Length: 255
Image 1 (tube, rainbow, N blue to C red):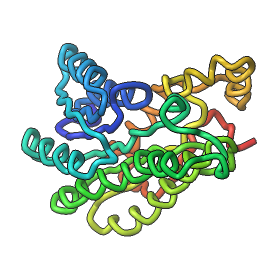
Image 2 (image 1 turned 120 degrees about the horizontal axis):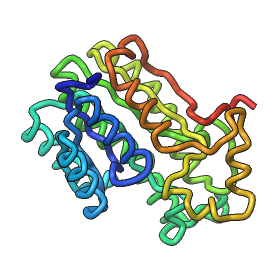
Image 3 (image 1 turned 135 degrees about the vertical axis):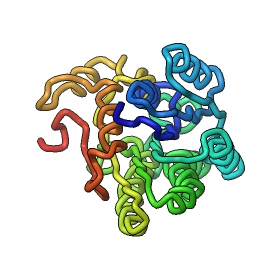
Image 4 (image 1 turned 30 degrees about the vertical axis):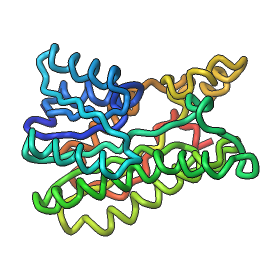
């Protein structure tokens, strides 16, 4: 029960890495706010946690919408009275290619560029903006931002996504510096290729799965790999860790 009596908001908790993290956090005693734009998915995750004896609250939210973010944070405080952990996980990637063009800078329309950054970077900014005052008042908190190996290494083909994820890395560092004096730790996870709905379409491309597994560990990552990293950073075991950019990529970035 490493998160006993702690309240954790996980954005994008309706699938993939966020869903796995929600189950792990709840298993360790956290009261989990499933912050998700997909009502069916978010409700399913929260209901499963409750059915298994945990405590969860689903709140529908578009993290790129400031009014919805503000309302989500206010509802969390009304319901639970505190916020101890924030996992800024919500993002869009290759699975959103039917809505937004994932391509090079020259081939990305401005409206798609803005939409991708609006969710993947502005979302972390907005949720943090409304959670931080609560954590400052409590004089404690852990914020985990989910970036990507794209945020550390130049990976061509999805430049808006890469720019947003690079922004998350830099945002993490400055937040750690700014809010450490308030007892708030801010860290960042940079996943490699993780077997989630976000890259499901890409995994069907011949050779893509094999290439994604071509890391020192020799396999593609699972959502629980990211959830376990986020769980550790959320706990008091990581009380002297802040400003860290943590690759969880099977060693891919070391090659």
